[in-house]
Length: 258
Image 1 (tube, one colour):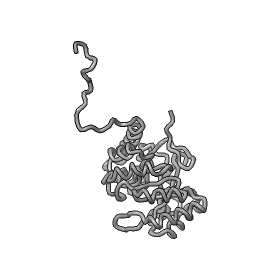
Image 2 (cartoon, rainbow, N blue to C red):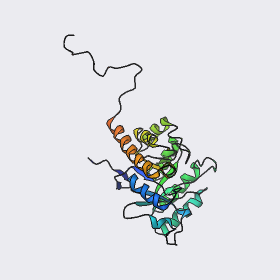
Image 3 (cartoon, rainbow, N blue to C red):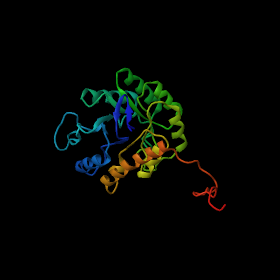
Image 4 (cartoon, helix red, strand yellow):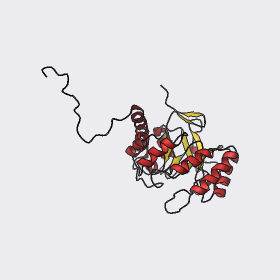
């Protein structure tokens, strides 16, 4: 039974998306990517040399036969800057897909939702497949969907914080509010956080720091892979209702002698 992630009509078997920053070495990054089973890998356009090639170039350590590159506009603080960066990535041959980031606050790295909406509208008109990093605001998510976003990617907690899912209710409301895929982006610290995101109905989870800065990135990548799979299975299975009092696993009704 197929349960693939569908983004803009493209099928991905893995619901885990991983990044490329902060790893101790390219070798560790490659091994972690393989252990994660991820088919989508994000690359910050502004942090790679799109022309140079060689052992120090990130792009030479990514096997595009196995993974789909998703350029992102990390480090952009207004809509115009983000749009230019997305165009640069496309012109350099990376992709017409973009994980769109428009940062509004340097300390928290929270998104500038006004700029995000403006950039989404512009890029969609130019033929980009836009996956915007956004807040966990239902109204903003609906506006992004209406603007043509292929998915919405709300933060679970501030980028790189490892705090885990901080607002479960909002994620559930978001799941109900939008029809496009919902991918939790940012804040995951360990495998249980990823499982919770999936149990709440997320279609996928994007992470970087939680794997790259773990004591053993490869082992953590494997744990995240299993957590995303387990969380998805639990969501599809349907959890039992929460009750205040106990309910016997072996009820007395129907027992011989009673």
